[in-house]
Structure formats: structure tokens, C-alpha cells
Length: 525
Image (cartoon, rainbow, N blue to C red; front, side, top):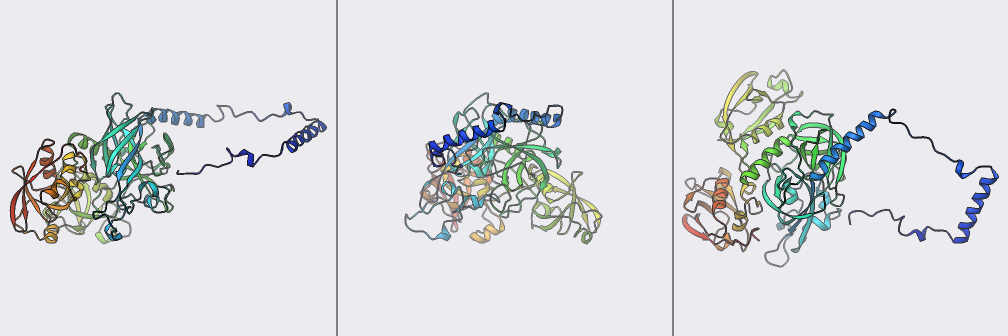
């Protein structure tokens, strides 16, 4: 139970007076009224204000009611069942080996899932295996049942139950996830569903009215809160990977746990963001909620629906904003732009000639105000596209042509927990790109090309085939693979239930391994 209601109702006997005393009080009150010549019928209250006196407020109420009536039918409640932490030996396990159950949660949410949080019994990972339950919200984006939500709502889900606004409960199937943007798409088997129209988040301005929809704390379905856009283009608050795009919409419309995956809409009832996290010392709403802008949501959702995988652009630079305090050191007249604080060797940016200390002030002729705006723009650019970066180097403007690379990060694109394709779950392994760091860590020679096996789930088909961390997969069904995405695509192309033939380099030699998959096991468990 998330809350205790005020127990003044339901135990009235505790507050009731004896019958004789109650009668005496009534008689005394009646005598007092008659003694003073006052009659109950004569007691009246002031007349309410007429509509003309409060016409602006009444008009605002009607407008908000109209938006709420239009959007609410497209908001769903998502109940997730997932498996808790598993001990491979069945005995005691060192705490350091179990992992942090709060790892990966958006900022402000961690204390809700801690040992003393209101959701500790639902979401905290226990010492022994058990089934866990979580809650979140989602938005229907097409009448045929596609729903967008947060990845952290459905991450690791074994079962998803989707409650529609009309109280129908349907089984949700995972279409795909994108951990980089914390977005996911699921689908229910239904037709003619109420859906929401897309809005343009690039046109948002601070001060605009917005409404947030969802199911705060799981039980409070069909909730709507009103606020304004507090700020746009907020930087990425995550610390686990600086390459995750920012561009968040900040709002003071109340957002609480359970609102994750719900809609943020503009005054026209258009979807301009997906509520995703809060910043709060207490863990409850404190006036600073954040939403992923529809500019990112729409592109990501469309790719997931089409292919099950999202391809993100990548330059290979660390960025920081130009500020009034640092602008003069870069010979800048205005405090706008993004500073390249570090350029990764052999990255697309490095190959194009970008250097540490360069200030990027435009992309394809469009002004770049800050690092967050550049990250979002590059992330949404298709890999292989050539872009023009306007830079300022030591006070002198230049233009660089850069061929955008593709973002890769091991388990972000090919882990068995990322079930955008059933095939990945059935194999039971995660792979990583063969970067120089990976080669060094796993002692893989430079002449070996493929994808590195990062982890293997116990008792999985991959383990049965003898695969282990540090191995390199060179081919899938006689086709060479050179990236995690290519591995995923080739594995996904294999019909369900059909065995896979992998060419695997391990400990200095390459051998073919047959991986027996199980078509009845769609979640890889």
C-alpha cells in the first residue's frame, strides 16, 4: 500500500458522543437560536461570482478540460513483472557481486526503490530470486496498438499488462528498446484505439502551458497536472555515459514515480515529450520534472517499429557549453556554442580534423547554442551522413566536413536483456564492438575482426555452445560480422527455432560452433 488514507472515516465510533449528551447538545443549540430570534432558514451564504467576473479563469478551465478529455483516452498504465536477482550457486553471495539494484534508474528515482522507499517491496532486488513488480505509464501513438514508454519502465520485463483508459487489460509485447535515449515501444493486440497527435518540441518556449498525464504511484490512474515549460535543451543528467543525448524539457507540471513513460502535451493536446525523471532531494516531486522531447521520441519510435533497432550518429567528442566565464579564453564575442573538450583518437571528429578547444557554433548552417543541442542533432543523424560543422579555432571561423559514425556500446545494442529481437534473448549473450580498449582488456590481437563476447548467461544456448567472455564472433551463418548491430541483424534474420552457425575465435584459434535455439523461449530465460 503506497499511502495510508486519513482514518477519520470508517471508525466513527471512536469519535462519537454518547446518545444522551448528543440530544442535550441539540436542545441547547435550539434554545439558543430561538432565544436570539435567529432561525436556521434565515442563514444564507454569499452568491457565487458570475462568469463575467471570472471569465478568464473559466475560459482557462474549459481549455484545460478540453485538452484532458482529448488526451486521457490515449494514456495507459503499464504493470511489469520481472525476475529478481538470481544466485547461480543457490547459496550466499557477496554483496559486491550482486550489483546495485538502483543502477540505471533516472536521477531522483533511486530513493523510491531503496530499502526504506515506498516501492522497496516492489522494485528492490532481493538477496534470493523472486518475481518483482513495477509500474509506469505509456502513450498510444497509433490506433493499431503501438505504445511508447520509457526503457526503464519495461527493462527486464517477463510480462507486461497494459490497462487502457476503458479499463481493458491487454498483454503488451516488446517491439524494441533504445537504452541510449531511455525509450521503448510495446504493442497490444487491438485496433481503433484512441491515439495522440505528434507535436513539434523544437518550437517550445519557456513559459508555455503544458499538461502531464500518467499514473503517479501506479494507483492514481488518469491523473493530469498543469504547469509551464520551465526550460528547454537541458543537458543530460546521467553520469554513466556522457554520450547520451540531452535536450530535455524541464517543467513544473507535477511528475512522480509511476508517471514515467506518460505524456507531456502542449495547449493543442499534441505530444511534445515523454515524462522520464525528476530531480528532488526527497524523491517526490519538487518542481523540476523532465521529459524527452518529441523530436527524439518520434524518430526513435519510428525506427523501433520499423527495424527493432535504433542507429545513432556519433562524432567522438566530449562537449561542454560556452559560458560568460570561459568565452574570453576562446576568443569568443558571445557565450554560445559547444566546446570540444576532448576529441577521441580515430573517431569521425578526429579524422575530420576537429581539435581539443575548437568551438562548434553551427551544424549544416543552423546555429548551435550549446552542447546538448549538438548532441541531440548528431544522435538523430543517420550514420554515414556527411555534415558541415562551423567551428571557431583560436578566434578564427572555419568549416569542417564530418562523416557521421555510428554509436556503439556493447550491451546497449546487443545484450540479451535488450529484447527488441527475440533472437538476442534466446542466445543469451551480450556483444561489444572491438574498440582498442576492448582489445586491450580482453587481449584480442589486432588482426582478429568481429564482435567481442562481453557476457554469457548461465545455462543459455550460448553457454551450451561453449562461448565465453573474451571470445570473438567472426561470422554468423557464414557471413562476416564487424559490429554489434550487424551481429544482431544477422542473428535476427535467422528463423525462430533454427540453429545458428557461429565462427568463433577463442584463445588463439577459430572454430565453428552450432548454437541450438529454442523457439518456445522468447525471453531467453
